Image (cartoon, rainbow, N blue to C red; front, side):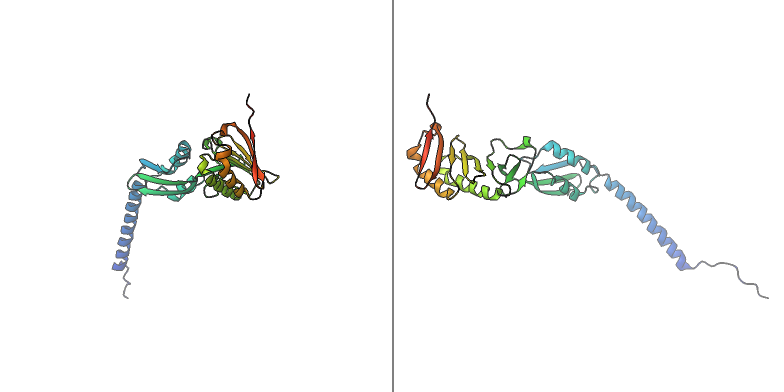
Length: 239
């Protein structure tokens, strides 16, 4: 009786598959090693542009731990999101520059006025609340009903435009609970303008100012514009 052949013949196709498999594993190992090396490329320089009001030390505290992962480990979206948590930052743009730089460009909110002694109002009409210590010096104040900041901002800008020939501007504008416009100019002069037709009243004030006040602005205590066809001036008492 013929004995069966017990010799195992390994197919060539299987040998080829095993060789290719080991080559694949080797390539993966090499790639992983190289990737680890690339991950260790340190960030040596972070450049920040557009900082005018933001606190640089706070920014540095935010950025430092996020750039320690190396060039390929830096998450630009995470840096952007963290920077935009700052009240001052409207937009942040973050780039990696090979081989060791991160470039950051900020668009900060531009403060126009202080609103109700609690926040700042930007030139775009956005309310934001940075640290009080970061408020610009001598910023003008708006005071009025909550939710009316855009209306007051528009009036503020229009009045400042009207009084431009007088070479002073508003330091404080308030819409009182009694719906009366109260103004203080940066030369210390106080003005009450009623509610209706405020721009008309201010326009008339600008026209008669040279004749009535002229170079005596320092002597004026108060101006009342709540008259249909005129105004009243209260002069400081002279001791």
